[in-house]
Amino acid sequence: MSEVAPLISDLATILIIAGIITVIFKWLGQPVIVGYIVAGIMAGPSISLFPTVSDQANIKIWADIGVIFLLFAIGLDFSFRKLISVGASAIFSTVIIVCGMMFLGYTAGNAMGFSHTSCIFLGGMLSMSSTAIVFKAFSDMGLLDQKFTGIVLGILIIEDVVAVIMMVVLSTLAVGKHFEGFEMLESILKLAAFLIFWSALGIYLIPTLLKRLNRFISNEILLTTSLGLCLGMVMIATKAGFSAALGAFVMGSLLAETDKAEEIAHIVQPVKDLFASVFFVSVGMMIDPAMIWEYAVPVFILTALVLCGQVLFGSFGVLLSGQPLKIAIQAGFSLAQVGEFAFIIASLGISLNVMDKYLYPVIVAVSVITTFLTPYMIRLSDPVYCFADRHLPQFLKDYLTHYSSGTMTTRHQGSWHKLIRSMLVSVTLYLVVCLFFIALFFSYAYSLVMGRIPGMKGSLLSFVLVLLIISPFLCAIIMKKNNSVEFRKLWADNRFNRGLLVSMIVIKVLICIIIVMGIIIRLFNVALGSGLILSFLIIVVIYFSKRIRKRSLSMEKQFLENFQGTAGTFPQEEPETGETSTEKNHELSNK
Image (cartoon, rainbow, N blue to C red; front, side):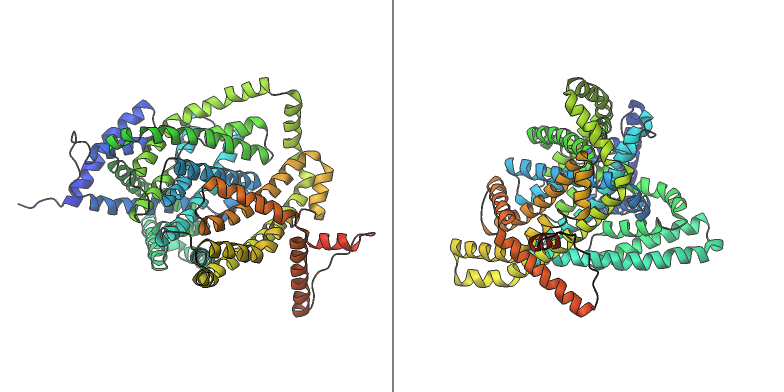
């Protein structure tokens, strides 16, 4: 008599249990994703009430396929046109949220005694909200036509992109077990080359082929071809040293640029739902309820951190981007949960053996709790706004009203666009140069210095040397464009623009502080707080040092002269009348 293969029997077990549990959760009006996780706990080895899975290795394969199709579906929902359409408000807010939550997550993990790598993974997991949960909550509550929901969904789109990039960076970190400057820079450049090459090739080939073969394509052929392209890009990505999830996301985003995007998303949906459900069930199977009880204190702390941190940074980021206070508070409260990308990042950390295993059930528990609370947090935003509106001083309310209207005035859009674009270009250029020299120093010069002068003296000498090398570039990152024509125009034209302009300078200062702090942590065994304070003081010295500023200006001047000599022509701007030589040099540093 033939027997059913364990793969089929295990799949039958988890799908039947998942079906029963999710029907109950749907009846209770709770998110289906949480039902899948609970079903996984029921089918896992920790509870013997239900039939358990005999071979978890097989389920791991199904779960990996689920991650692939989940990222493929997210890629299908993403497009470069959509990225542009979400606007500067969503992009700026996402930067504030991700940076703030990663810092909070790392600090909290460090305080609770987690390993260094686990703290980094924890920061990444806490910074990602849930697109699926938030969209479902908005749909159920009839809020999709509200203005703040568009901003929230725009933020979630950017977060999905950040999460994919974060997975690549964390994978590189995990393989090396530490931050190695040159290896990290090499991985980032490799990722950029991979994305640029396949994006250019895919955008050129795929839409053309689909148009030419349109009359032969049925739903069946389109489904088969789409999944084949997805898995093909997964193979290419893994061969290139990247994750399967990145390959799936890239192919999804390429297909999103075609005329068949909506049709592909529709026919792929059932396949994605099936395998994604297996993935979420596998997440639950890795949870031991006894372990959650054992780590109840970290679960409580991290839950409070997510609720408070996402509300704070989300509201602050949206408010700072020029939105009214009510919209900012509504957006911040809508983002207060840990999303499905946290499970993928946690699975990555566990599979690479670089993350503490007890952190997995902890982060899943935090996600489940915050997911349950999401509808209540969204409803709570209106009473909180009413409370703030009643108790805020009138002058502050007037300031916020004028600030939001001032930043959104259409006549400033050209100046804002030009300033942000030029500032992004200059900061990116000097940041890449700065990271290149840091990577070069630690790859070659550091071992030479420590070989001749070991111990603390060698570390101090290395720190001084690398700081001397990068200080002109750090100065340029902070100073560039702070006195440009657009900056001065926006500053003088409307005093309510000044908050956003100052925040842009603060972000540049924070970038420099993070760079210096990374070097300090790399060379010295210091606490995070001490490293942060020391980095801040060093950046203050660099900012006010006339010698460093003069050196930065002379290097840039020499570069421009060489560029003129090789390129033949270079666009020059006429100096303003009455401009002194000192003002000319200062203007050069800001162009």
